Image (tube, one colour):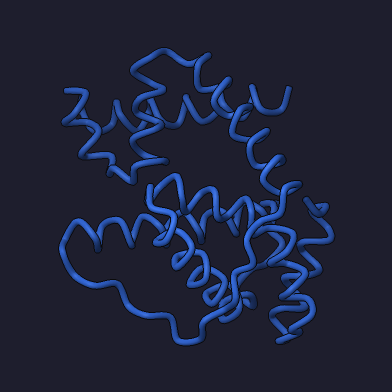
Length: 180
């Protein structure tokens, strides 16, 4: 994985339509973003399509990323997660997802990228196990299944604001765990 400053530089160059920077950004981040799409969509072929669409969005919207103290990886993960959730909701509603305007080749992640992704997944899984069972289930529902706060509040039979608090506190606990 590239350093934060390197990713920021690549995104800035992509905003200027630098194709080499785009290739480098894709190579550095595609394994992680593919893992997020796959976890949300639970379908490899659809996750591959979603990943291509995510990078088309990144190509077109790189100029909207600005260094605000948030990491570039957080921005990329947010774009991927939101896009995957949109596809999931589209699938549930029964309509066909829109085809990407400009397809981008998706080379399969190599062994090293898969090993890194597996290590990250194991760390996140271990940190999720440190959470109370209901809180961990709520986090999985929101961030892996794409469930809305309202759906989760109904599922766990708690008020909506309680669910928001659960998720916010759980994410803070996960952040602390992952930074150890």
